[in-house]
Image 1 (tube, chains in turn purple, green):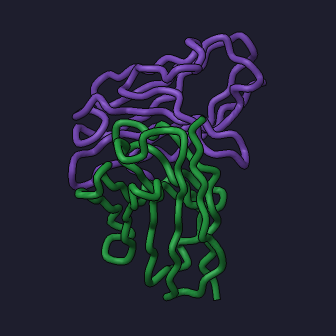
Image 2: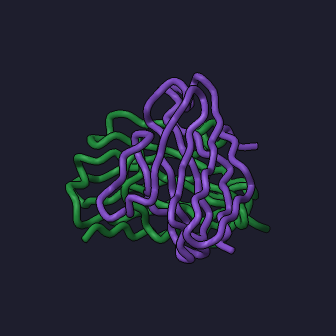
Length: 111
Length: 117
């Protein structure tokens, strides 16, 4: 069982928007503004999509938006494209003891 | 261009040891905290360990504490993970990643470790 809870799967049609949630506790997601999101295509390494809750690294399309409310972080992908189909993982800093926790991952299917 | 190249994976028996290496290039290695993240076959990502830029601070997941040791040689731009007393649940692709709890900016392609008799 992962420390952060994500839905196992979400789906949407091209052009639509989808939101993936990531629920933790006040010791991780809710306690720090250090939530990051990763995209992973089959057989490939993960790729950083969002860091510090809502910041996008250079080269990541602005269709990807991160946010947080309380103990739940969210990744919203708007204007879905076929290449967005992948697994998505959330991650949070969890203090100097536990340090880092990941979510279990969400499979995004573009219909 | 940033590159992280892992090596050292392979087949090892339960209770055995293995040392992973990660050669870095394309960024100021000594300025970056570095981490190992693993992924068991068909499963999600699991953080394993992190080391600060100068190597003075190290952090471990409870699942590997006391058995794994992370280290780095900034003169060689190389990150290491010494894995002792390996268990079957340690079978995974091990990724080297640049960064720490605030975000893993860079990732290698991973090296497969199989723990089996």
